[in-house]
Image (spheres, rainbow, N blue to C red):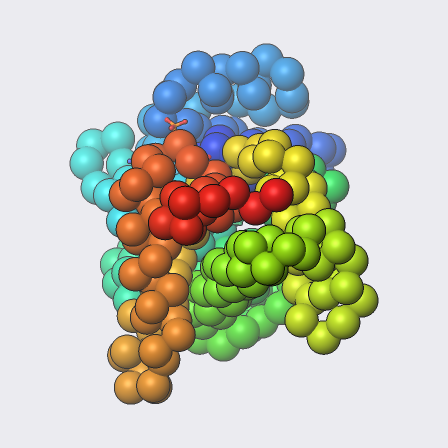
Length: 297
Ligand code: NDP
């Protein structure tokens, strides 16, 4: 018997993740808010387009969500067409959204009342990693539920790490992305200062990337996306703003001094407001450039 999977959220990263589940051994149903995307997916892959969240959940052994925030996941639970209307006892709910720990705990508690287990399983590796099936997946929840999810997670990811109880995956993902935001912002500040001091960014990156200041941002994002002015849209700034905000909240909840994360959350909120919903995360650099009155070049 194939494992029946309901996958909800065919966005930038959800779509390539779902593709890895359209394989023998899995019977896949996909649902997306904009239904055309689910229809197109089902036309191109061995999968069924579900008409509602409840329809996607009906008969599923595993339900996977990959939506912008935990808020949208929680909102899909209710109503006559909502997930709870379709979920049977014993189903496993895997939320691959980069969510927030408090909402994930609330969702887990509601699902438990209906005999449905929940793990948070946010991912890293970007769209390119998702396309290759090479994501890192960080899981919060019971080890026994992670074991159940493993064949499905292994199809989408290369590295699956158990981080702790429900919410631990979300917390770790948010902190990782806060570090990404710090790196993007600080590389931009450094390159702008050096450029004004007469050092070309290509020269600066050649040295930094052979030295202790390097990061994924300096080694990959800046050479490929900023210096070329390509700024491809792969991961929305709105989502990184959300992630840094979650990390800032986690730090406040834990009463950890976190001036750098709190400031970074403020900066990315401002950049998101200035640049809009569709801007890519690396375009935060453009916000700093506007403040500086100069481009990195
Ligand atoms: P996108 O913005 O590309 O896609 C969002 C998806 O959620 C779409 O399918 C969209 O449907 C759906 N959606 C939005 N609002 C609602 C709603 N109110 N109800 C139901 N469905 C809704 O996001 P990504 O795919 O990039 O990201 C998804 C998650 O993965 C986020 O939590 C993000 O932080 C995380 N992530 C993304 C990475 C990336 O590189 N893109 C990397 C790692 C994690 P519709 O098509 O109708 O708009």
